[in-house]
Amino acid sequence: MSKRKWIFDIVMVILGGALLFLSLPKPEIPLLAWVSLVPLLFAISGKKPSHAALLGFLFGLTAYIGIFYWTSYPIAMYGGIPVFLAITFMFLLVMYISLYPTVFAYFVVWSKERFSLSEFVSVPIAWTTLEYLREFILTGFPWGYLGHSQLPWLNLMQILDITGVYGVSFVIASVNACIFLIILRIVKKRQNFPVAETLISVLLVATLIIYGLYAMRREDKIVKSIAPITVALIQGNIRQDLKWDPSYQEETVHIYETLSIASIDYSSDIVIWPETATPFFFDLDDTYRPRILELPRKLNAYLLFGTPAYEMGEDDYIFFNRSYVLSPRGEIIGRYDKIHLVPFGEYIPYKKILFFVDKFVYSVGDMRSGTITEPIETNVGSIGTLICYEAIFPEISRIFARNGASLLVNITNDAWFGETSAPYQHFSMARMRAIETRLPLVRAANTGITAIIKPTGEAELVSTIFTRSVIVGDINPNNRTTFYTRFGDIFAQIVTALFFFLIVVHLYSIIRLKLKRSAVERKKK
Image 1: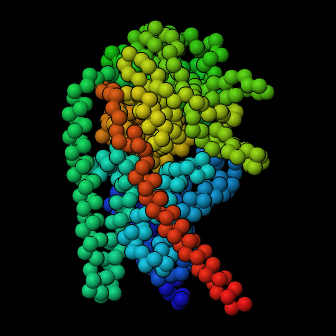
Image 2: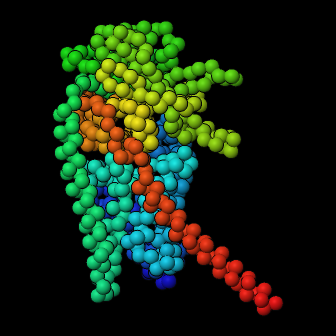
Image 3: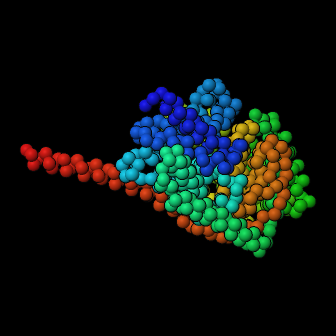
């Protein structure tokens, strides 16, 4: 292969990677996602699978550096780690996630070579499968998917209550493959225009649009038939470098008390503070605990807030990232311990292997996962709580919905990430949980983004980041069960089964061929 051709291929995959990260927050230009895979497909077309894999890896590096550059920020800013080491950690994460487009590129070229499988079939199957697998492998990290890019176009996202985000990713990948085939025919001046692929692509997009219009109208009617409750969301805007300073505890409690009392005029039914809003152990504190227990009585409302907690284990203390719900009488009526912890932030995964690794962010100690998946029952609804990172995992909100939750609450502290794209990416994924379950979701964030999210994913009364805010609005709790809530990622599982079926068929053919050759050799002897 000529040097000029390699340079062209490298430029193409870098372009494709850039289109992918630009389609996500920020700047969030959704149209770019629909052509982001096209340059990569041109670059790998006609290549050997191994060469395609290298180009896929470069595509991933470009895309995921743009998406995940912010991971170095909390490590360097709050982890006490030199900047170059923080950047190294970011590169390690990016290199790991880049393995997925590496496999994608290899599979597309290999399936073309082995089965003469059209890119229109292999591209959506491979891309969707690898996104789905990324939700589980190595603790899971379902962040920066193709489908996440389309939230500005809510009509296209309503299918989430059936297929989850993977349905949207599948359609986007299919359209990318179709555009690639159309351009390929034009460039090579072939007569066989991909009519079937074009019609199917148009049908898939039309399905998203039509179902989206129908679903949004349906949801508006349903919401109007449900009695509302009033929610007050408190954004304290506590700086991360002050949050755990003992001398700032009084100021922190005062800020949340003052902002909460400001919501009294709205007769709120429930007041919600962010993750670890109390920077002390609420269970054991004698100074501020009585004041917080008294606050719901003043507000005549429920109070939900986040706090660190610990219990004594057999050999040592066990720490939790916890939320409590207090009744209007100031009584604790429920608690929830975070189930899906942040790896390397709240605990060290595979600790026996990674014994030399320490957490890169400050916390009270290695956290333990909670086990409670039942919503907390109140007079204003059954509350399913998602703490911070949990909002990116659809499985947790589905479990709450199946167990009877009538509203979802996401409490978080995105102060770790400063003014990067991370808070906006995190917020966009939280909105998807509302669409999937058709439950209202309210989000209280320490430094933003705080908002009320309708079952259609529409965000109302959205705060700006790094401002002190009180957001008060109405939501309509309901007890519904969507297809996605009941059956989960069955769409992605079917696609994944097709992916592995092709691999198994290939392996079977290889084994069968070797057995035939062995039999022939034995006969010759």
